[in-house]
Image (cartoon, rainbow, N blue to C red; front, side, top):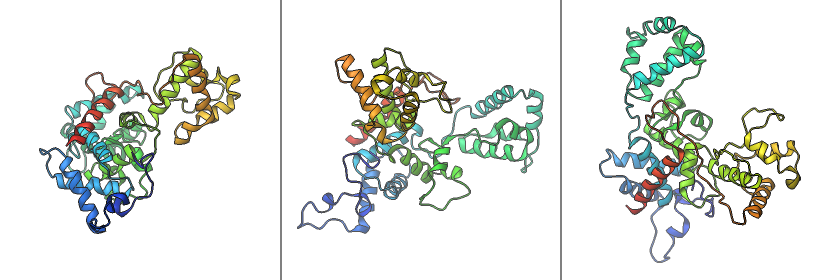
Length: 367
């Protein structure tokens, strides 16, 4: 899992463990130059036969695993393939149904929030772009998130109303074959193995870039999980969200306070005297934890790191909760989050997403 817990972090010959290459001393293993081909063939045979250019997809996935030093075992390969299949069905830049209408609704929503008159919005969209079309005409022609992202960049750069509405930030925040977060990709661009064509944002919409950054978001961090389904939940809800939701559950059991199990232990930017719901509950245990409010805050600020799992506050809260419940509590819980996006037309949750990906993952392991 990423650099899998319980497996050696050092990877040999492009990712295959040494034991695989030397299982029998009398039979030579594949030469180093051939190892990548072995992995690519394994990936390719696990991709559904109906997918176009399976060899190309396999090559991009193998490169992502190798350059990030992620073990190319069936579990990691199938995790990546399952997310790709769930998110876009093996399309690097998929078309989105009714995208012009969705985009215009978002523009109108932002205009209303910033008290920009509708007449001013219409006037801004009537401005001619460099190709002679109005921005309204260009908006009507978008079919993919990449199309829309480029159009937003142009509107922000060339239309005064655009800068006011979007505050210089492109509203398209996910993209590519794995629908990875574009800010995440921009923050983790160091070591990107390909020449950047234009920007990291543009790379995310390419097959190779979407796979590289999506793989990093899925597997590029260590976790305490024993089941991949919690990593799939984290892919949707954020790193360590499942671990943190389990901590919230333990805090709820220990205090009797009902908490939203969303994986967010702190309210971003909240002053010390105005804690969020989870932090307030944990503070009720301050005496038993032998921690004051400031110490609790500092401890909860480490919830985006692996070491939080072995921290004093994590250990003590679970000990208190289990002494009161009389039963062991789970260390990972799928966060209870309702998915909210203009592209979503029905009620979906992180649990739905994680279970759907896990189903595809298991099917891949059987292929």
